[in-house]
Image (tube, rainbow, N blue to C red; front, side):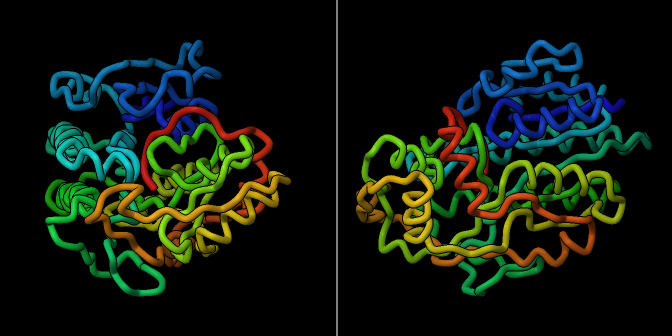
Length: 332
């Protein structure tokens, strides 16, 4: 039985990860300030003796030092959430992404220096690739950010700093770290409140409202089910060859946003209209987007047995049947 710390464990991805860890037989400590997560996401497991839930900030150094001293693994998922929040609050985005990561890594490195290493998973994001023009991104590709006058890039740049910090701890102190770059993770309990497109579409279709597509809808994305992503995370943390490396995690099945809206309408058996909204109206006048975001999953597939159970149609059907849900956490 491992003793595990999950930051952001009441969020969308974090709550599914917490459930999987408990199912595995671990003792799990969840820290979440519920700024974007929600304790209700853990309703199915809140009464279990193996779960300790702390509604606290992972930016508390005393708390971090105390908890990290007494666990075997750390899964760091707490971060700023979604394009909408990032566009509105770039300062909070930078601070919430970098400072807690530094605290956790510092505490873990103290143990590593004593010869008592613990494994740490850092949840990163496809946003670190910025606007690299390649049609498919692999983990060694250059990071191409826009101007600092455009707040959108603060999220990817701050998560890139997190990655640099984690990999430096691997190089300097042999701290076993795995960095996972999430690509549009979706599933039950995800909310559209922070700009996540698929739950927005499903909620609108089920309510008979128009599905709002930003710009021309020709942006290309890939959507992976949260259960498949969690399985990949756990697989990587159990694989020694994954330590000190970066992995794309998600789906490589591309679809345009306009086609996604059409397929949601079809699955929901409704005739909701599709309306187009400019980025200026959705966010602000200096917002920039990425036209195509498709991961190369070769490294992931050659390191662990990654075999997703859900294709996009199955994901959409599940979300239509369950009606999505109410809260959200991390990352694209």
